[in-house]
Image 1 (cartoon, rainbow, N blue to C red):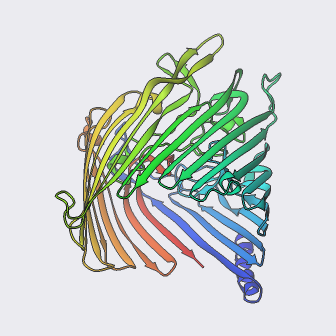
Image 2: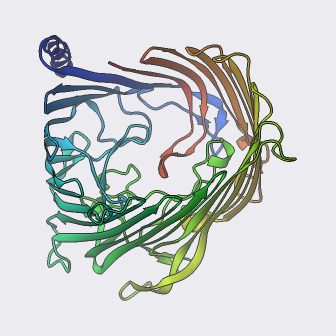
Image 3: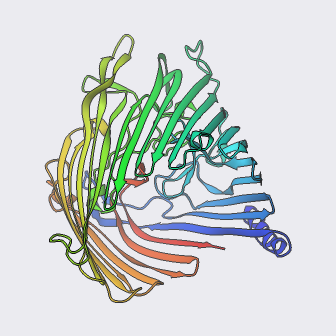
Length: 556
């Protein structure tokens, strides 16, 4: 019945739009047929087996209708026979995921239904959708954006957060204002703006005699300055006292603490050179629409956006030891205590001038990145009762260090190469709450040759040396683009250095894609290495698997 309703909405909307307004939309489907694989073993020497429902699919059909200043939209979702492995188990079956009605003019924007929003950098509040991560934390309620002048924007919202095909019982409400001072002061070459945000979460608790209020308040202030080649921005966020949740679903009525975040970005650029720096300190800043959801592995009911601020790697082996931001409080034992993170990263870019000794005829680009993240230092009490007091600018145990250098060289109009080196330190004990520390070095070489404007071949070779955990890896990838429509690829990651014979696995895959106009179809077969899949610094864990996958996407 739900499929018929969605189909009816699709065809009736298209027919209606021929006379009134414009209809747009799209369809996306990610399907996986999981297979048994005797050659892919786990740590207990057991072969990989498919789940009880081996054929699974995440599919989305979305329609948007616009008529003058009015617009409306609906998104139908299907998770059949079940969602892809390690997605939120609340995603099951076929149903309407989101819908909205919106009125928008030059001065006012009013939305009813489901909507997405962000205050500032998102450290206090962000609702968004990312299908690769299984995130859709839209609010269902109402939002108003008011722009009385060109230099002032105000937002107000209230609603309940989406979780699966339902919404939470807690109520979320907030306000955001941003004023562009440079426009008021008539600065021509400088952009200056100030912003303020408030977010409230009201959730009743079943705990008897709670030592915390049902309403948790969050406040944020921000400043942005951009003067041609130089920019600086800063934001401070504060979350009022609330119960700390160290283990999902276990609310601690005896550990009540506030949270905070400080973010500072700055950069400078001129011709062929750029440098950017970021500093961030986070303490107990996880924010969920329901307290007990804190720490769940699906990013379900999360209300703010705390990405890892490291280089977003695009090579296979550089994504094995991926850092995740550490905003939570953990008081497990004397060797595992943390209340947040402190650190930052620096990016430097330089383009070597053409015609020089190193630049050659076509020039050369050099990019370097350094990031370092530590726990907060302080005094931690593990018993009777648990508590902590942090040093604001104190650096505790090291979580992660990452140094990258990437050189891009264009040899001629058809041939280009990229060489990169990565040095990493990864503290598994502190980040994953397991054991061990890993020091690794990664070398990568990539070359692309273009036979024509749309035909090319790309080859990548990678090697990772590690002193712990799974030890050494080697990887290779080859991609062939026949034209703008058809492409093929093959890749293999080999964990040849593993100390355990049966864990020296090959993670191979091969496939291709076909694109015509706004439609793309991709088919792949192979093995999935277990680990983190990250998009924009936010990650989800995927288990090892083997099988056939297909992706279809189109828009109209």
